[in-house]
Length: 383
Image (cartoon, rainbow, N blue to C red; front, side, top):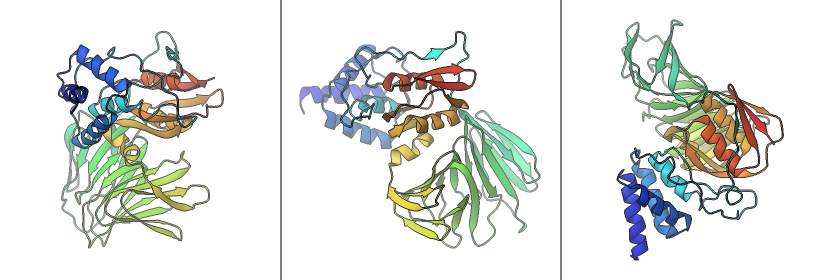
């Protein structure tokens, strides 16, 4: 292996092991910015994605300010994959800043914020649990408790609820887990199925699965790891759609302010039903139902984009600004107000969901054609 490739591999290893010095960090980003050894970098990114690297605790706030601009190869795509490769390294390790190309050399974002404005923090593990008797329990990241309803004992540990195998007298009692805007939560259902619930979402489920099938209801977005049980199929009902599985991993995005309902299969097999339409999905496929004409189509999914929220990331794959801002609004619990038409540019790349709102907006402002102003919990889109 050439000396420069060995050096890059060494610097990458030092970075993820939290032993990288400031000088080594600058050297690493300079090499990435010049495009040195892109094949080795791609291999590292692929391996790191699956390795779930630890979060470095080095202060990188001023480590790197600007990367050499690169001309778009697809017209309106602002943040290119190659330019964003450095950002991907940071995202995988959980660092809270970005490396992205500017429209012009030396250009800096000019985010318009009010003097003394209170910074809006990212979302966190927050939810409300509505029990069968209508009582409501507030859940958060720090909670550790046992919630009892009748003979059912529900464990809360940090950002997760766990039901385990519950005794049942044959009657069915339902609970409802609701996340607000700016919240997310996890739940382990009585059969062992794990569900990650994104912000502004709701999951309704029984405290015990007693019938011939396991049925839950979803609003918003949820990621499911379904416990296999061929004798008791698992079903998710979303508006007029139904997803049936035996045991598999999949994601459903069904926000009412989105144009489509997207069901994405990672492993196993699921059948999507909408009216008279039925479609069997294979891993890597996504069923898309148009909310206006209810047409069902199937396409190849971008798995990393679909599951980014669960892994603490925003990932943009040729996304327009309004679609990005809808995600931002749900996670930061803000309202988006347009005073002008949004630019037609598309964004690629990504950023961690652990940043302040102003950091996200500065990223968008520095790489697009709109500016932003924050007033209270409103994000105003400016020319």
